Image (tube, rainbow, N blue to C red; front, side):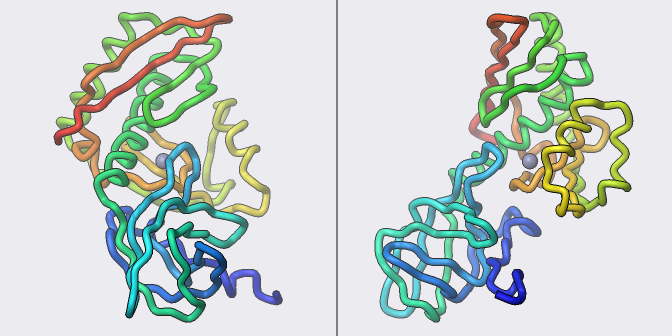
Length: 241
Ligand SMILES: [Zn+2]
């Protein structure tokens, strides 16, 4: 392949995390999978699970059960076959995607707040959990973060997403951010930054809400201690906005 971008799937979810439906064409296909020229289906990545939904076309439809990125291609795993060249219409199952987006964005905000309170390095995170180690976090700080989080949700602050080169991105003496940059392949110099102005800034290729109000308030923020100075935070959002 002379041009590596020639057959890459255009990831529509990058520019528009709220896109629920789209038109595309099947460019590769196999038993129970397709690769499309463009897609709004988010592939499992960065702690965010993949989307599900349906792909319809003239004469049929297939359920999208899982979406995975392999190299530059985004594989949609289906319950049936669709031939190459077929024009299709994709529809994301929105409720789970939005719930994932809200929790993922909430994790950004919580990380920013905990770091500001001297949480220590984050060593693990998913859609309902954050681990810091070594960490001096205590119950009082956790309750402060909880109150701040809910106040920022009530403020409904717009997120800002922008691109920066490594040089433009001055991480200063922040060793966690330096280490984070080290993990990104050297050939990636267009970093997608997700900023909750004043509260959380991080490199991320996931899908996010438009404003902090769309995250929703915390229903519960639980705190526990583990071995060797590890502190574990379990967070749960209120489902209704
Ligand atoms: Zn993110």
